[in-house]
Image 1 (tube, rainbow, N blue to C red):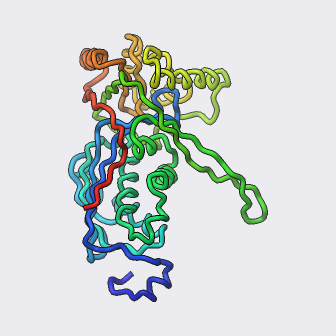
Image 2 (cartoon, rainbow, N blue to C red):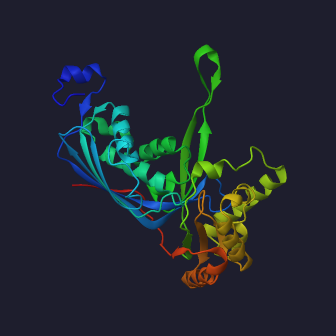
Image 3 (cartoon, rainbow, N blue to C red):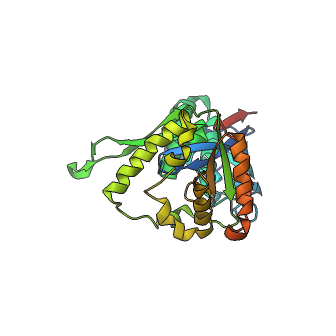
Amino acid sequence: MEENATPVDRQSTGLDHRIAAGQRVTVTVPATSANLGPGFDCMGLALGLQDTLVVRTSDQPGARVSVSGEGAADLPTDESHLVARTILDRWRELGVEAAGLELEATNRIPHGRGLGSSAAAIVSALAAADALLPAEAAAKAGGRDGLFEAAALLEGHPDNVAPAVYGGLTLSYETAQATLIDGGEPHRPSTMHTVALALHQDIVPVVAIPDVELSTKAARGLLPQTVPHAHASANAARAGLLVTALTREPSLLHIGTEDFLHQSYRFAAMEESAGLIRSLRAQGYAAVVSGAGPTVLILAHGSEQAGSIAEAIERGVDEFGPWRVEIPGLDVSGAMVELH
């Protein structure tokens, strides 16, 4: 659309409002770890490691993107950048004419490591897009819950998106409502929901981040279409224990993080991570694959155990390769927006 389009031109495209130029918004979104062992595709935890996005609107059409930190050498710097594309798509979806964009992305979340970098990008883009809406269109966005729903739809599953939006520990699920499509055939679109859980104060996450990347698509491609009923039953029991361990009784962390659904199938794509997890679990630590991997998440019971875990990882460097070990803390706020 041309910069000097008339109101009649905008109406003909179905875009009822215009984003004002000269605005600036800053968004911070945390890294997240999904699954936490048996909580496959439903549980997530926000970590104290954040990406920051600054968005300015301008009269100049198009998008210009500056990236520092993770991915700076590889990510596009125009409208094809995921954040720019998501902002523009969000405005179009809400019937708003876009302004030009100037983005500054400071990326601290490692890419392709199972720490929710794509979820953080999507959430930051949607949060910025919604914050810059004119008042007449803001109600359509739906606030934080609308942000979650839109992000979960784009990401395809809510386990990373939920803690990125709300912070802390989340348990997400889908419901389906039957509708009719052409020809009267039943169709059941999914609706995403999440529940915030009160994390026990003694839980301390430790992450061991390798140098190699692994795409979520590749990791998911290793999963079978079906699993034995006994494995599904055992996993359900462990997932229940995991909730109890994370919220009330951290002594159950080791048994509560035992998985039967996905980790063993993925280990072929991350042998060093698999070896480290087996070694740490043999020592009694609650080690799991973070998201799709290859980062290893260890849920410690207290800061003293967290320090012992970091030392144990360092001792295993020769056998399992080098790791960047961090104790990032927790993020309890989720996506934060400051409109300047």
